[in-house]
Amino acid sequence: MSGNTFGKVFRLTTWGESHGPALGAVIDGCPPRLPLTAADIDLELARRRPGTSIHTTQRREPDKVEILSGVFQGQTTGTPISLIIYNQDVKSEAYEPLKEIFRPGHGDFTYQAKYGIRDHRGGGRASARETAARVAGGAVAQKILDAVGITVLAYTLELGGVRVRQLAWEYLRENPFFCPDPEAATIMAARVQAIKKQGDSLGGIVEVRVQGCPAGLGEPVFDKLDAVLAQAVMSIGAVKGVEIGSGFDAAGLTGAQHNDPLTPTGFASNNAGGILAGISNGDEIIIRAAVKPIPSIAQTQQTIDRQGRPQTISIGGRHDISAIPRIVPVVAAMVKLTLADFVLRQKAAA
Image 1 (tube, rainbow, N blue to C red):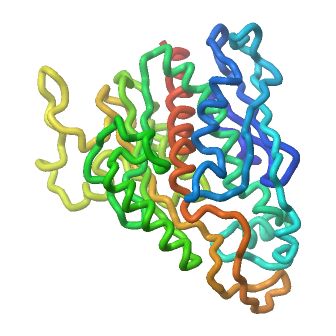
Image 2 (cartoon, one colour):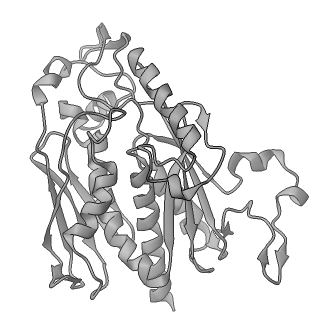
């Protein structure tokens, strides 16, 4: 069980490392005759591409995909789709001083414990660079969702303690944080730059809203829609918590407060977040992901080396100050992959 494949009918396998020659994805189970071009995928990749603003890592990757199989004359053929994204701006020498040291907050220690070997260059397989392949897969999944009228909207709800106060969608692409609140986006930018000067990093919250999802998606018990969505989003390295609907706030409510009354025109509220008993209820699906601070920071930290000897470490180089905003399209991609899989599962069951 390698854990590199997600989905049961629509299946995504990602491969590659941060400083390897390339990374990519293989998608199996995609229906035929869906329109798909490299430009469709590149559009999504551009949203998580590094080096696009002063608030993100200055590693500059073009992140242009090549479709190697599964597409002919602009349409999917129903056979496996193979995608490749070449790494072009690697600086592996910067990681040589870290090859014998475990970085705090990273997967260095755990990868060594599991495999007895690790690629220390940029975190190898544990690097956020791997998520480019997920975004590429999500772009393909969106083609399935387009056919049934499902839309997925992801945005920054909070960054470094600065929380959105309004949802003005017209501003979503007007700032580098995918933030629907222009005033909050301005404060976020100042917060990021202040923390950067301190050699530290920030966490935040990404919210996703799914509209147009029909009632009936999801499986009983172990493959509940919300359970698989939580798994999908939690599989992203920087995510440490997932909420659906009212989430943890539900623990402080009474049943009378939390239940969503049903009316002839729909639900009167949406504490359920669009999912009841693990099955979509036709309402808007709302998911939030708690994103931890980036572990690579310039401040001095305590750690150990491979021999267990105490060491101090200060990490330089090209790193994000926060996984936000580049994680926003990644969270969206994992939601798209999940929904596409359940759409196809439902068709198979019909």
